[in-house]
Length: 134
Length: 336
Image (cartoon, rainbow over all chains, first blue to last red; front, top):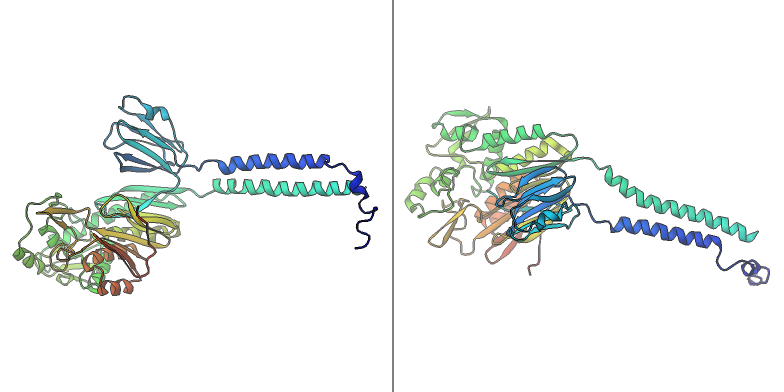
């Protein structure tokens, strides 16, 4: 303990610069890695199912993994599932906002057609509901 | 010299840390993309829909064949086993396939154990009360007379049928009829589970579930569209019976399709009848049949003894109250 703070022991700290080239490299690496990590962790969850509601009633639940085209029951809208995303590709509504929304594939994504009261919701997990059917 | 050595040590440390960080980012990405392929088979059977999710090789054709064979055998109309038994005269043995025979054996056993609270032999009442597939229209002007209910009740019960050794079923009383509606969907889910084994994820037959993978299942509000309870279950089954799908109203009174032991719809003479019963048990056929029994028995000692016998549990809803019987995995969702 007695000689720890002697001039001889701390001489090289005094001669070294405050920040060396390696400090700079380490800083760069940390910034680089945290940018990658953030991008990965903040990426939206991929949707797995799409649920279609007409006037608040659930009418369809389809997996996004199977490409298909189907008319939404009770409407003249055509739901197209392709490449893991869903979109409304035909509809008789006046403004066609739902069609312009295009393909939605992230969990939480929504396509709305206000005139025909259609809501298409993308979810990451299937919801199982027990009840009486038929 | 000292300075140089510490710098090279720092350099090695950074490489190690960088390597670890890169690995920790890449491993989840690769493991997610290497998941085994999941199949989803959907269709219609037992007057409702079905959906089977499973992993491994594609076995859609095999499953479709099994399900349509069960659907045909259990239908009360057509030329399947149950329709043949119902159409056959008293005393004539009808040879049925192994599915029908096993389903009937189990249904008769639960019928006995529940003292006919669940029974596969109440079809004459179902027809009398106009809940059969060919006479149910969702409305009625009048209900059957007390006399006709009493007369029909004499033909109801498993004692009016005999199961023979070589997969034969014999009707013993004229007018008696079988109906596997209360157990068929669950039985099908069990057969699918038997066929697929560990590859099965979820078999859903008209909201009667048999699951292997852990999934969250919610109970629908019997008087609304929101969810009232939920549970995460695996290697289990869940089935619900209720008064809110097949029913009609006459003079302000609701009559539902589940027949009580007195020949009237379940809960008809109860002040606060059960309107939804959800049963969890190891087998879907059991859950299916026991949920019907729970509608008939209500929150009673008889029900808790029955559930205990089959290692099952139950969530019951009446108009005003809710009960759990046994060790149910369901938890009520707080309502706003």
